[in-house]
Image (cartoon, rainbow, N blue to C red):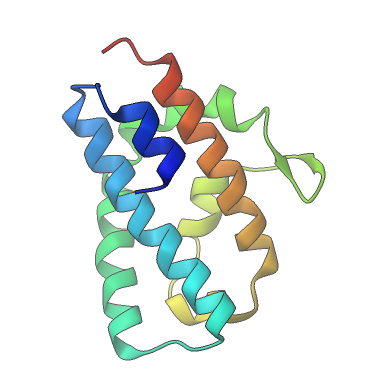
Length: 123
């Protein structure tokens, strides 16, 4: 888990949110690894397919809470023009991240929104 996010959720009891964060972390690490290494394996594709499917299915539960938060984030120095989570999900295959600098910028916006959601949560 992202260290700052881990710090924020350490005393929280919201298991569904923690599960969402764990899956997002897995996707985030995968995207960064693919982009930085410029390598994409069959295992990467399998992990991406599984994690993406889980996130696409479960994201609607958090989308309305995250929307006002990601709308305050920056992507490439400008206010996020679209939902950064859905921007990442849009990729059908993990190989798309090999050269997708905009995806990398959207990861930062998504992480910021996710941390703000954790900070604002009641539990």
